[in-house]
Image (tube, rainbow, N blue to C red; front, side, top):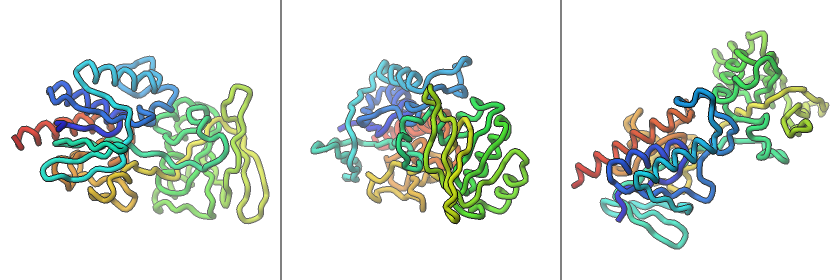
Length: 308
């Protein structure tokens, strides 16, 4: 019987591991087959405290893992297929194996939705991203594009005008789905140029493998075109990685785990905590995920103490 099983890594998972390990809870981290979360696909992180010259995303994850294991965290590179409540504890399914734990911290993150175009995954971090807050500052005085038409797309486009020389807002329809105030703010900005009724059909790269343009197609007329730019910010939503819980905890309409009460890592299931992007559809930052992981570990420690 484990005291704490942490499902997933990334900033939330490793922070939870560091705190629970230092509390002598000997946590077990189930890291999956590709640990590290979204930061493993990020080239340089400039906004994480303590790294004034920036740090490569994979390096930051390695340092966090080293810190967690230093204090006694055990790591297994296995994927979880299900979690069930078992009396006052939990059964965690890992392939044909079933592990038992007194508490579970879910830190499985969320995957950004992409267009599904050929070679897309290889371009992430090389002119293709889903986070303007993370990467906008790398694209000063150059044209960029945001794909999407909701509140997130409008917010990303408006934020990017602080850096980019021009922001193309590419949307498949002839009007934005965003709330009225967000849409008006974006369209009123002279740096933002809407590209209506249009889909992106191909990413074009330069000799170094960086994005240099996108091919477009007007969905009403069929007319094809090309937009020169340096980065594409895809803002068509995220998919929280919570499906394996199969209804065990309450989720919202978009599949994010509902924290109860809001602002805490607790869920409607006692002893099960959610940390990071799997429960956060607002901030989605490395630092907020780490803070969530810290809170989840502290809550797990208190829950175990009260149970005993």
